[in-house]
Image 1: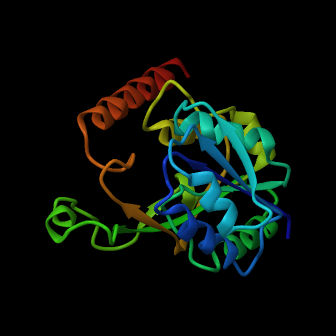
Image 2: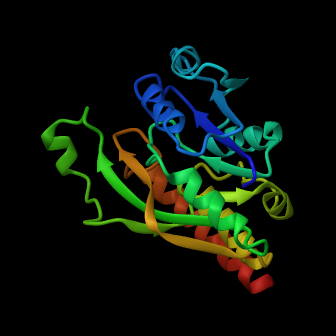
Image 3: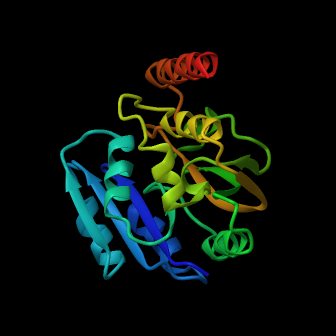
Length: 225
């Protein structure tokens, strides 16, 4: 199977990044390289990450958002396959092995997703956790930490749109579909997605505005095509 680069965009993730990296180190198919892009954190995210993962490649940049941090990671990645993981999410141990094997078995396949199981962060109080309405079971996804993509296929589509604070991954998948990329979703859970206050996944007016803008661009793009 081809080698894998792992990209982890991180901003003030000191509380969770070590656990996320432990899930990377526990993979049955070890990645060739793990790249953490510290997006201008004001805490000790990078230091905790280095302590948790010897050999980690750390890229530091001024705070520019998750899309920019992920793009910076792709600029460094060298393996033929790339997988991304948010600095507060977790992978099951066979995530990389399953997806790399599927891509090795079909040269015409450009990327592989899977199912995502969301869970409330253990740091939340019972009352705060109850505010989030989480799916009752795993959900199919091609986004973020659920996706493994061939690096050359990602280059065909281009970088994530850094002007979108949220929804940039959905925007990229829409562009990938229009570009003719062949993507598949595995039946297995490939990501455990942590839900907590202040994360991009937490409900907010800013998040809703971002998704509205993403949808507007997708509609305009489809009409143009």
